[in-house]
Image (cartoon, rainbow, N blue to C red; front, side):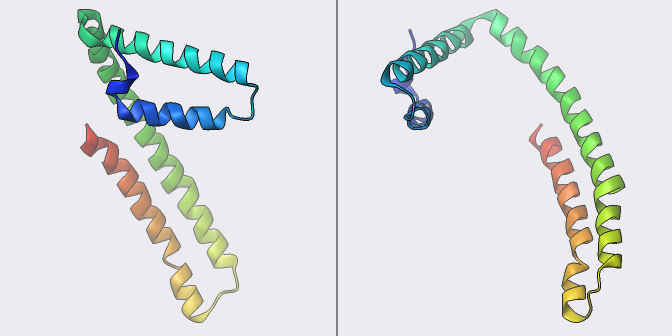
Length: 126
């Protein structure tokens, strides 16, 4: 069986989980942590060498691409179609002048840059 001692990141996550569970009674903490560790070990053993794991990864990669494209489309539609016009209307109705108006005027531009980066990031990660 695969030990989590081989994975320091898993040990850090288990330590964080134990800290989050600290308000619970000791018996509950022990039972929950043993279940989590057992699930981690089972998942690690299943993912190690089976052909089914590789087939599942290939299937998930195809689904991941579709969900990425859908997520990007929704983000662009909501960002460009809702967020930027709403911010522009609020800024137009606000009584702001001078340097403050100049600085606040960059908010829609920064929203556009944020949407662009959020769109390009997942594509570049593929």
